[in-house]
Image 1: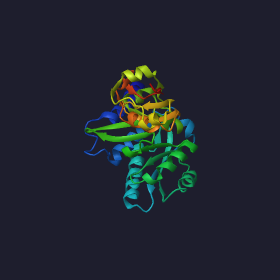
Image 2: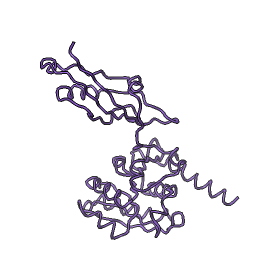
Image 3: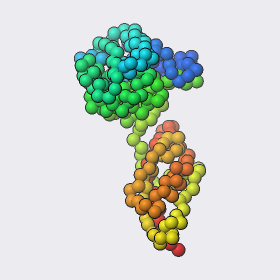
Length: 289
């Protein structure tokens, strides 16, 4: 009975983290205590935590040095993390420190000096995000944040939404940072960064709800130019084109094709009850009549 109760409480904590009414604020940012509770709870669902942190979990809270708001927020987050954790996560001792970085090139030696293996981002560190991503990948440091704008770099983002606390998991970032999260967490979280699956062009075309096909550019017609152009397109879970690239291009046609693709919208592709990203390739034949 005792083991069963502990399991229920752990899962209940996760449910609180992702959907407890009243946890959020009017804005997307959660208070430090809610961010800390969410972060500590989520670390317990990382199957690689012990492997990545054999000597214990050292959480660094990153602040932009010289920015009073960022430094103050980092101090509040560090205090909340230490208080929520009770000093241990999954039997691993937890240490928390504030890392102040003033610019590029300073983060890597700072995390190496302090032995940081998980990193929480305070507000105001946006100028450091590129370096954070590089260092996290290189040293397998799990990155989390309470700022929605950090979700491209952070594997975990905790936000307030509609009076609730929500977690967003960037699967690509999590993998590159050495984390493997339990499937039960992923079913409850908002997912992004998943590697898109390939979908046949005809199936993608059938899901298109807005936009036009590219036309034969007048300049190409006047020059008597014909071409076959192949484009790789990535469509996000919301049905918007996230990026595209020319696998086989021609300068006479690329501007017209690009303009057309930017206007495309698609009905989301749903797999296992969730909208997912997809990639496909389109071939455009331009031949004079």
